[in-house]
Image 1 (cartoon, rainbow, N blue to C red):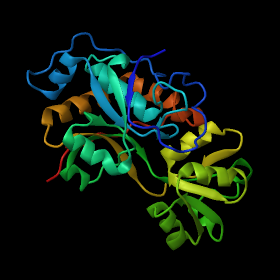
Image 2 (image 1 turned 90 degrees about the vertical axis):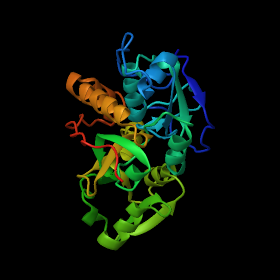
Image 3 (image 1 turned 45 degrees about the horizontal axis):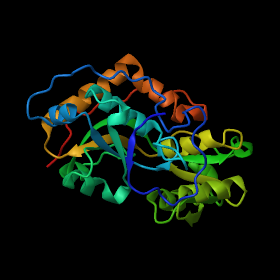
Length: 295
């Protein structure tokens, strides 16, 4: 069992059990090779982390397939977690040197700015506005808004246009839900969490759930015989790794590490052991942005 340290409070959400096949101790499905005494420029963030043999990474705890801490587990698991392990390994830091910190959407920038975490890998969509406050390297994954439906409806609901007049669930106040109502004529059904939406879908109260496809794939992997993700994405979200603004050396290191994971198959393995459990194949690797900052 991994001895990975954990900080933060477990989110009070009723989510499904951990993804099948990813291990009982939370994550670690990817065979990452920990670098042996890597060398970095003296005084760089990478050198400081490598010398300490420790790193704190902010991840979500409530998104199956991306970042999820199962009840009783020692560490979170998911695709974002695996990407964090890949970066840590490139610094020469093994799993037992990683501190996973629960990081929600509202505290990603504050945590990076005040040093609570060293990196954020938490379904962190790259935007120009965010890049004025923090660095974002990537994208390491490209997704977009999609639909989750009951398997029995997978032939009749395949596009957003098919949801006209149907009950579609997402979290309260989300742009995803507003888009379904305004652009496609769906009847919006808001809930506080995606897990509540999924419960309503399975019991037949709603006809579809919508948000980023990566999040939906995690739920589909938890219920492979009952629900599935359908159709192509109809928006664009590009996930990046967050770090302190202006750290160009870290930007270069992260880009190199991500590209290496694309080229050597580690990225695909990370996908297959997490989001791939939903039955989908690993997509093509994205093209990394040249810059990590704006402003």
